[in-house]
Length: 148
Image (cartoon, rainbow, N blue to C red; front, top):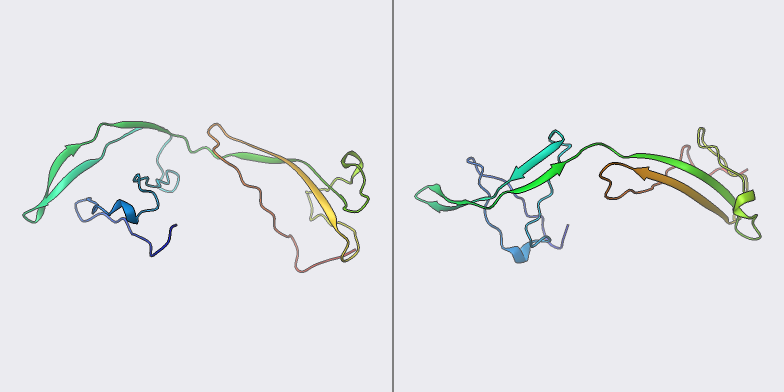
């Protein structure tokens, strides 16, 4: 995610990771992305410790563990819904309260002339017990540009 080539973090056969120079990292505080849904960790409370070791004589001697850190994994997905989607002509458009509502159950078609600017107002909601962020995206439901 930063400049330069990716730095892989891959454990050796015993599960140890090589120390990487912090100046080479995008996250110098050693923040690791842990995708709990992709590895099927159950919801619940987890305790994590870091074990440090020193390479010696073909093996690794443990240097002890960090204090434990406890956190909660909660993988329930967010629910999202459109509350209101309206459109109007950009020049001299209607007040939003009078603007036509788009029916999103089918592929909506906005009837206007080519080159005529329009405005959309999208009101939506997303929620989850542990929602950090939500993103709204758009895509077409047909091929090409259609005008009516």
